[in-house]
Length: 468
Image (cartoon, rainbow, N blue to C red; front, top):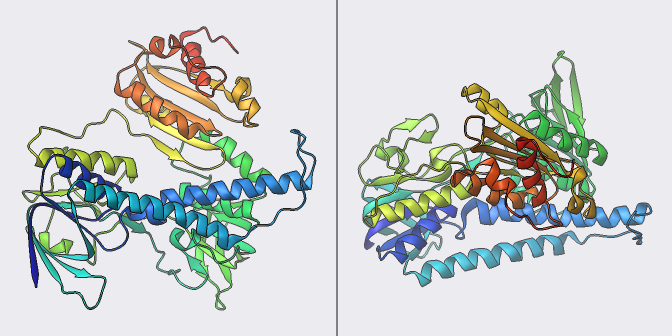
């Protein structure tokens, strides 16, 4: 058995793990990264990137179909479009391959040794790695510091296991064909992002949600434009409805509404999107006997676990399960291991829902501030009064700012509308830098851009918006 000794061993090559590896390499820390699949983890391979590619392809196809079905206000018309799904998936896979290949190149460039295989933890200093190739020998790796970055996995319903017609987001991102009837279980961001994409590709989509509204984790005002768009698309919503499982033939989904009435929903495919959970089993994590926080590994503000020199980052440590959070944690741990003083205390972490329209949430909402006992000033600016939004036919939605009344310091931003995901960086930066309403209101924003709505929201909170 080959034995490798290193300073830092990273288990998992997702966004957190590979960023930790790159930064550790830059700092001269001998590093080994173990990953069983392609570098990039769920995000690059079967999550963030491929889902956004499929969403984009679906949007373009939907636009083309609308130009064929009726006269466009833009004056565009076309014949009935067709989609070559195999080619679409190949394009999506090409993006994934390019990005994962780039991650591998960056690791190599910075001197990180990538070991392909599945790790099993023996103790806090040792793992064994079973390579993908059956002919290759098992590798034992010993380290001074162990960084756990195993990520998360889709939650499976015990009465509706994955297989056959029942799929997770992984299978939904590589369809062999577009199902005529798709039932989506769960109206969170994953279910609605993919459900919307499939509807635009031609499926009849029914979304079943136990709560009484879609996107229950989001502010109701932000959700209204998304609900209206789903209605226009023809997505059927069954809210306050529980899923009971498949029927005996396995072709229909049994559901029960709030009044107790049961029904059967025809389904060629059933996408179960009820959340994700930390990946904690199957790789020897229990051998470390770490302190846990529910299903997640408990860490401090330096991502230290309860075992000395064992660290954990990303989805393994619980909510918020966001790739950019994992990246920031991974970079921090690499710097701590190299001898720098760091701790994880971001002022805000942005969250984006890539529905149509998109939603961005950064920092506190008015409801959050109220619960925290903070007296606030808040104001919204509608995209219906924004020139750029008009020119891209995306006037539904708004930008909202939340600031402390005492000193006008901004504590939160929310936005819903077309392409508002691109506003997330500015929102987060303003909170991180401690900006006040006057800082944003007094900054010249380019015209015509969606960003003008950001300035106008701040000006409106100050009492003198210019364009409303």
